[in-house]
Length: 207
Image 1 (spheres, rainbow, N blue to C red):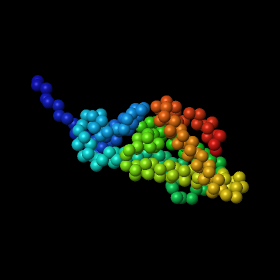
Image 2: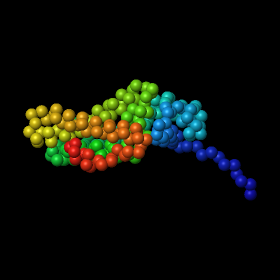
Image 3: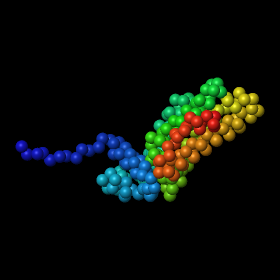
Image 4: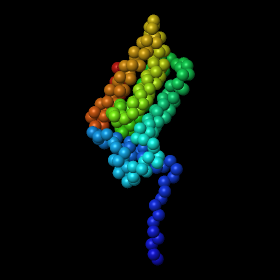
């Protein structure tokens, strides 16, 4: 019997878009990689640049797709720990400290599992891209810090502080500096130094 010619399977709706974002994230995982061009991304996928632009109007939109994934994943996990943003957080000082530690841990664990995304988080991959991308990442960290402050305020009040809100803000700022330092080190070492290295001992010193 004659072999029938193989027909190329067409991707399902949305599948090609997902493939483009996965390829971009994968290319970002290469330590020391240069700024990624649409030509390099298209070559990685074995498609034309025109095929990319059928799914994204610009490379900035591709990075926005990665940021959407980061926000949806991380904030979904944070919500499970601390509740919905803006809702009053009623907990004991001990509960608040544990929640803050858990939020820091889940953020660093996410980074460890998604090294390409870390270059977006720290802004390394966003250099020379549209300013609004870095602005979104700044807002991302501001939201995380706000949630940490909300978690840590009961502990500051329990210590008899006359300015528990200020003290909680300082503590949240220290934790965010720790997180961002770990993320920067992860990228700087070519993803060799894990963000969660000695995490429990580090958090015990900070909280």
